[in-house]
Image (cartoon, rainbow, N blue to C red; front, side):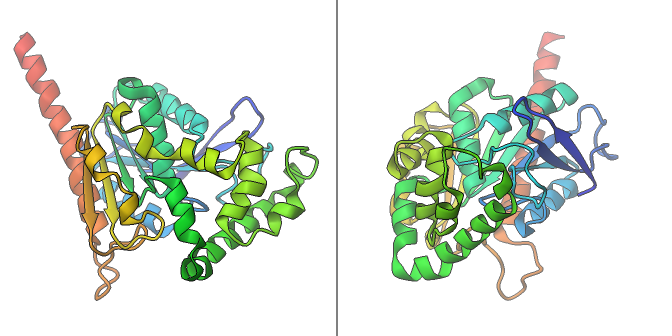
Length: 313
């Protein structure tokens, strides 16, 4: 990423935005260059492989991109006792508002991966047409988090996926534990003993964000209960073999009732993968679909605005 911008929310913390091509390019005026905001998944950040590929894809198409790093996810010490969760979009709302003030004439869309997709979906569902985005894309987003939890608790998934993920979560908490040691809401030592994501959410996330239980948290965070609230174009890319978003948890029939949502489900792709295993460095299906989608969103909007202007004349 070419430059970092830091926002300072009222709670005393920091929000880090990593911009690529912050100053525009030859394809667009700096004031109007379309912007793609990238939301990484749990423990992800601007250095994550998929974040880099998405940012590079946006640049390839002539657009500006910025990665919204979740608090405590990018190796920088927390300045307040606030982290992030799938149901909390307050920081993202602040980021969108900031970008709209910074570039009021530029169209903005966002792409969220895994938990980042959940945060993005919840934000879009909450604010509808007033969300400040012209479109959204979610990749590998769990549609029903309770079913994701059940999937990750299965023995093989628990050993391969959940154990590794909770190790990274505990690493981030251990790095920032001085911010929580005196917080009466949580027992840091108990949270650090978690061996699964569900255990960590029960011992830490629920207590920090005021949820009664893991089920309460997961239900609140789940996109499947808010499908009718989406008022802007939203593309969801899922894989049928993704243990974080099992195929039977994707509400395909309900999605059909909202013309604003498009769903693409591949047979294979894993969790935010979709790579070409014969040639890993080649553009993946995700890379290609993402680039086609953002190009369609921004170019169609330009044509629509041009047509409206011509009608007024």
